[in-house]
Each structure stands twice: as C-alpha cells, then as structure tokens.
Length: 227
Image (cartoon, rainbow, N blue to C red):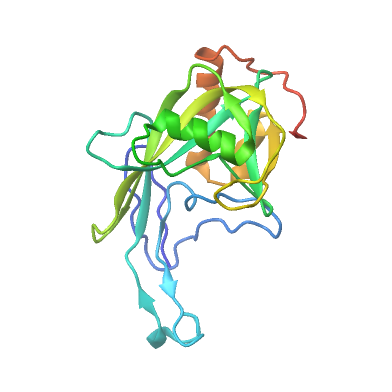
C-alpha cells in the first residue's frame, strides 16, 4: 500500500506502510478514465489463480509503479506524446465533460500518424463528443507518465479550446459507443473528474486560460446541462 501527493513538477514517490490510499470514488460517482488521480503513485497487483493479494500474498506479482507528474508547460520535444485531452469551453464559460458509463473525463485520445496535438484534439472532439473547436486552441501543460523501471515514459498533453459548434450526438467511430455530453460550471469540474488536489489545480489553470486567452466569462455560469 503506498501513496504520495506531489507538488507540480515533482514525481510521486512510494510512501510508508499504512499511508493513505488515493481516494476511492463512492458508488456511482464519476471518475477519471485516462489515468489514475493526479499526484499518486500506484502499484498494480495481478491476480493469480483467482486470488487477490490480500488473501494470498504469495500468489501475487507486483509490477512497476506508474507515476503521473503534472507540468504546467509544453511537453519537451524529446518526450513522445501518446495522449491529448482538452478542456473545452462553451461560449457561456461552462466546461464540457464526456460521460461514459457514469464516469466523467475530458474528450481526447491518441494521436494518429502525422498529427500534432491540436489536430488530434480537434479530431477526437468531433468523434467523441461531436463538437467543432474554434480558435485558438492552446497548450495548458502535460502529465509525465513513467514506470519506476523505465519501461514506460510518455506525455499526456492537456489543451484548452473554445467550442464553436455543437453537432448532433453520434457514436464514437473508435468504440461504437455514444457518450453523454455534460456542460458544467468550472467550479464543479474538479469534483466530477475526481483527480484529486492537482486535478483541481489543472481545472483552475484551464479556467484562467479560458478567461484570459479565450475571453470567456469568469462567473455567473448557467447550471450544468446535458447536451
């Protein structure tokens, strides 16, 4: 059992025995789909012979700890970008969340060959939540993902952009599922995404960018709404 809250720009570390676990979402509470909560180092234990690690410690195999570290700046050129996700804002200042099987996340996904981050986000926004992005679409930062043994090392890019058009909802061509689309006041987004303290910081940074760069309102938002 391990944990480790991290400050921006630092890596998560394994804590002492008995340290607090990352928060477990309550039944039915939405949670983040593309990575564990921000600022936590997690060990994944495989089940062997149908028995969990708590019941049969000798029948488990520990795999390397995957660390997620937030950096509020562009990803370095040498670090491969495997995922791009967007904080997408409506003209009234609300943030668009994708809801899949009761879990909230940001729209986005993997770059296709030859795509830059903005092109990936525009395509994924159209495919997953059927929205068209306006200008500008700007980088917010990136999450450095790595394993303690060095076997995995890549960037999850975060971007901010305005929604210029909402199209009729349609199934995602990659999965065949049609996701729900939820517009929420930015202050609610951190709890719905359930990324922890550093997730709230990302939402706050994205909201500030939406106000300063996109010229969107800072307050007096409509209530949340499915579109």
